[in-house]
Length: 251
Length: 106
Image 1 (tube, chains in turn purple, green):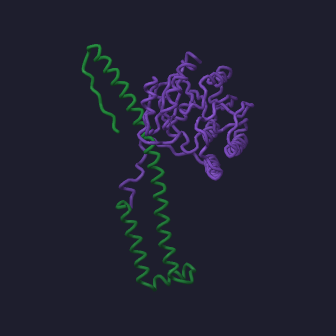
Image 2 (cartoon, rainbow over the protein chains, first blue to last red):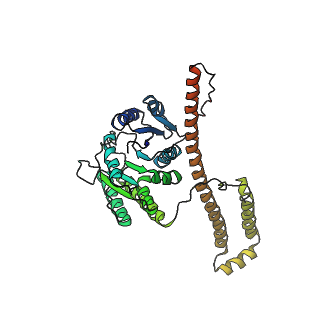
Image 3 (cartoon, rainbow over the protein chains, first blue to last red):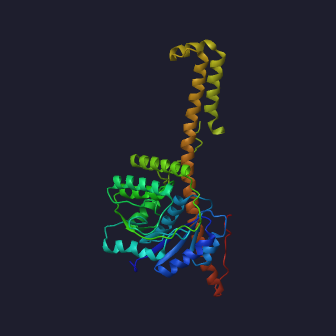
């Protein structure tokens, strides 16, 4: 895989403090990966820090969320003909040294299109807060049921996509709850997904801002999105589409 | 709002009309099986509002999608431009030509 062009996509929203470290970590532990930081409308110095650390930066004019930001990264990957694209979060949670674990799967099995790292597949000492763990377990169970593959960490953003997956995501990527929905989407489009155990760092920000109630609300919304996603194709924007609000159609 | 002027106008005429010409309203509510005619008026007004809301919902969805694509492609184009300009600056530094730079829209 080292001879093929590889890209590391780093979505970042107000991560001025950690983004430079993430970029340098990538340069050191995964030198064959070009780095593009997607600045998701940050109000701090994220873009400048990333550039200073030597990364290419995509500056979104306003915040789109992780889904929109990652899709911009995949669009970049497609435009520049990359064969592989790995997602590395801008907060430093993902360990670039673990990219090897993801890449290994591709080397051993050429029919795989998409690999993601699970924090829970093996005892790695990572313990998410209880309310998140319950949510993750439920999604994991649901997705395992639908895809008929073993899914233990569907919310993991640490994932590596090959050319086919890149092209799919550049065209259409879930907006609201991308990590979970993407696994389902890849499955629906008949691409092969594989899960691999990895270890990650705990998030540096001390207490989670997610309360029990918020967690339940988030979970319900994702469940709904997943169920709806099962039944309809997401309409994507194509050239030649009519304007959303047109003078002729308006009454 | 002016885009939907016709729909608003139509709604206003129908509702006002029914309010003024009570007999029409009474006949209509009997046809609908509603015992108290003003309720029929409310029902009709509500139905118009629902239709409008549905229309707006769809338009907003579409706008969001298109807006997202614009943001993404803008970011990509600006990056290409900066890269191009940097190459231009490097060439100029080597004594070749004056670089032109375009300021980013902020």
